[in-house]
Image 1 (cartoon, helix red, strand yellow):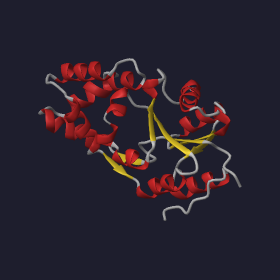
Image 2: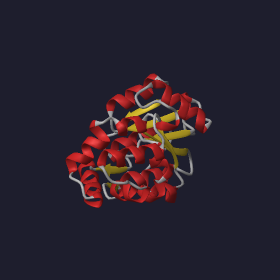
Image 3: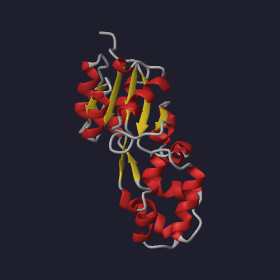
Image 4: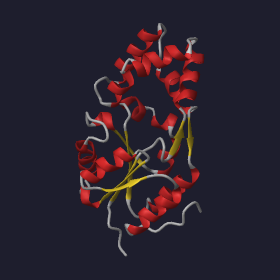
Length: 208
C-alpha cells in the first residue's frame, strides 16, 4: 500500500518531547535571581508568551519585554537553557518518526514563537538529528486550533491538506486539523500513533 499522505505534521511538546513548565519556571528564576511567581507573571499571566506564540512579538521584543517585567536582562542562551532543561525526548515516538521519515516528509507545527525556531537546535536537538523541519505558529500569525494555521503550514511545506497527517496531544488541536481537511490524530501513546500511521500506509513497529 502506497502512503496516503505526503506530509506528517507533529506537535512537539506532549508528542515528541515531554514538557514540564514548572521546571522551566524554576530554572529561569534561579538563573535570573527572581522567584517563580515573578517568572510566571512576566511570561504567562502577562500574555507575553501567548503574544509570542501568535507572532505578535518577535524574539528581540519578547526578550526585552520579559527582562523589563523581571527587572533583569534576559538573553537567548539563558532563555533556551531553561526551556531545554524542561523538555525530555520521548524515545519511542522519535523512533516512529525515524522509521517513517524516509517515506514521508516530516515537520513540526507547534504553538510557539519565533525564538523557539531560532534556538531549536539548542532546545530540541533530536529534530535536527532526524531531519525534521521546524515550523511554529508564529510564522503564520495564528495559533492552533485556528484552521488557517494548518492550511498555511501545508502550503509552506508544499503539501495538499488532504494528503497531510497531523498529530497533537491536545484534542482541540486535532479537531481543528480535521476541520481543515487533514488526517488528524489525538495523540495518547505510541501504539495509537503507530496504528494511525499504519492506516495511512506508513506501517511502523511501535517502540522498536
